[in-house]
Length: 498
Image (cartoon, rainbow, N blue to C red):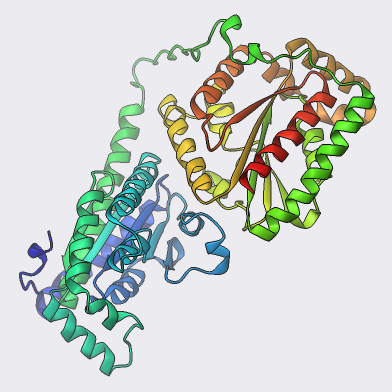
């Protein structure tokens, strides 16, 4: 693969200057056009030490509109980054739609270096490459244009470049150490590129010995990628317009697939379970006491926890969350209420805002509503195309597997109540002044779609209840029983993890 990048390709100063003005003009125009489009551009700059990666990053920033480009250099992990799953640092840096993100170093760096120095074996390395491929495919499915530049140098040329950098005082601390393993770096890097070179995220190997050649080649590849996507988006918009002469009929809405009421997963939740006041007080106090102690043990042992609360309107999610947090020191948890996405959040992949809130080691994040909105509200209300929410089941499972692999304890609760109980609670809220704020027209509108929502819940439980992140279906008709069930479940899973 790298042999093609050792042909001695160069670009004379005359040819470089002759083509540069046109390239920069077109590139800037494409970048300005990108700002009004709903897709981001992700550029990964990787390759051999001394190959001019930093120089290329500087040049791209010079050629692009600085107001629409973000550059992130990934090197050593901070304590904050080490306390979260590896991809957390990259999700935080993702460019929004209409913007360009340049990554100097990326999700490839650590796996390659660790494999070269024998910290991981082939099987673990290939597993990491597979996860990278899945990650990039997810970004591409969401519309991202991904460009991966690998700047290559022959051994002779790299040695020459490192000596020059050393003389100028610009040599990196690990450059000579890596050079001593040139053959191994080359072999392992080539393996990584072959296994992650996909239609969604292709590698572009650039011969890097000549500065002008590598810069002009990278700029041209970037220009072509943006222009091609802009043309594709424009063509899709034209094709989507109905004929002017004849009004297009509104497409028939296809209702989501629904199970018969008796076959629903939720129908098997025993809603008749009750606790007396005495039983409730005794059980809740015991469970909260255990959770209080376990939360501090988790802090000491650096075990994080994530809780997800979903359920019907008026099911009692808020009061259940309060019973959990009452048992924990406020310094150990954070509650994140999820509402409709902001403009900033809509400009990103839907999982972006949840990655940002992942807890540090030993702490807990409680999500009141969560990433399951993609396969609940967005599915039922038609906010997401079917292809998007169908794909989301796999994306969510992958996300939760990454959390579990990092040692995060995951609790997911669906608080279930009957239709009759929901109606009773709605009417109660309307009749009590201090509860009226809890009931809105949207609640009544959602209630009218009980069957489509029930089908969506059945699907998410069936498809997203895994060993690492199982769903707990909470019997919520009796709030006392539901609260105890939730706190006891958290205790059980945290005890097992510790």
